Image (cartoon, rainbow, N blue to C red):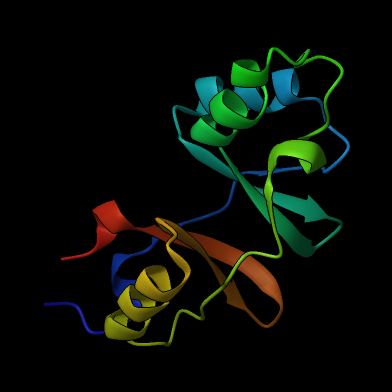
Amino acid sequence: MADFVRDVMTPGVVAVRPDASLVEAARLLGTQDIGDVVVADGQQIVGVLTDRDITVRAVADSADPLALSVRSACTRDPVVIGPGERVSAAVSLMREHAVRRLPVVEDGLPVGVISLGDLP
């Protein structure tokens, strides 16, 4: 069993700007075949946007996804974890904050994502 986040995380990060439209983000999710993107303002993580966020926070409310920004639908100020943290710490954070994904940050920069599916 892997002990550290670095051993189970998905390395690399797909990011989108907070001012991008939800359509842009949805296209990125589709072309990358992923379910979430990190929302970054420069190199600072300001949120996480999932395909479910787009569905529940925009489409279900009949909002225009071309007019809405990623900022309006993302989960802001996400909980993050470091690659050297124990997997058990990631599990605890996910449970405590009721989230399925955590951006992995090293030296202030996003380096990956750990999700429930990555956990043993």
